[in-house]
Length: 498
Image 1 (cartoon, rainbow, N blue to C red):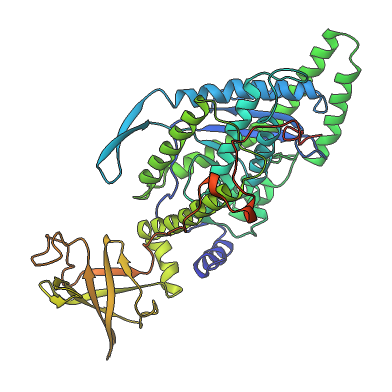
Image 2: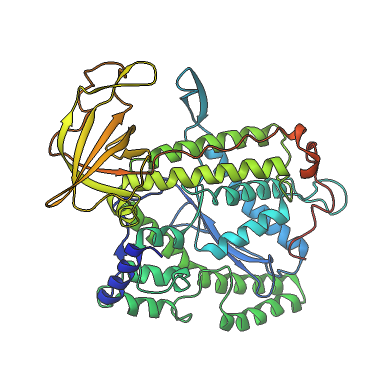
């Protein structure tokens, strides 16, 4: 926990109300997100019991598995979920847009929209990952064949869960993670896993404080858990309902048992359904950060490429990444972390303040400028303007570090000198980049900061550069040798839930 987050948590506990951690929203919110609230059978890793899903807050779809231990019924559940989710994915492919690629030298096409799956909490995300793993490698012919929609659904669920590991991606998100990234409650991280309790801190009823609202939210009689685990007390009722279904002597009694089960499960899921849309409303009230649109554009590009791969008959994700694939994925993850940290800090003064406290950034006021400064470079005289910032504390960014300012993200700066004054420090900064002509002045209007301008400079802004990874056909024998095209086997399709 960072210093400012700890301070916000203490203030939340003192005031009885959650405190803002950001000034803007750092995640894209789709106009029509797909909300999924799964429940599983207690004691089972991946035995689906029910789900409430859909894109219409006023008309959710209830899916129920009367006997979760029945293999046929489990796959019937996944078929029903596929009948909801796959058309939603198709609706995101209705329109395309052209975007520049390769530094503007060519253009490409991508979908104008992308799916966004919202789950209540990290536990629901873990269950969804298992559900995808247990279905994406199913056979559609031969013994134990399943409907073709089942492995296709598993393929997309696995892909979406994988994308959720990349910071900044908005394709699959947990609501508790979204809310606690923007607000600090006065409770522990474990308690923040309860969606209703988090909402109680952020937006309590008028007659209650945050702690009081959170305490009521944790009462299963008032508000059932958000899944995927069921409430232990409700499990007693659930045992009787499933037993009534198993013991039904005819179709009429069996149908009545299913209706009773659906009624009880709907009552368990509906409070969380309303909480999910309440959380969406709270997040929509926050203005989006400047870089959110760019990250969503990248999500659309990734979705387009994945759609093309699936349409061309590409194999599903293997059980384990091979050496080269794992290295490339790790490089992408490290790059995503670097970019997301930079974007958040450049978009949000509160986030940047964290880096100022840690010594990775400093703020100051421009007290001098030389907008026509020329210096001798390695081969020729070059144009390098200089500004002097007045700061209250000595910068701790380190000598020789490349610095950038959110006000001019494409411009680099380097510290030339730091001088102590009677009321702080003067920092001389040499500027490069964003000058239109690096050999001679003048600089474009606004390229060189003006006197009196308040600026923040930070070591953030450079992007991670991955080491070269060999092609799949040229992997050293020490790392498994050359990789052939992946073909699923019967062992790969081993069920997670058995």
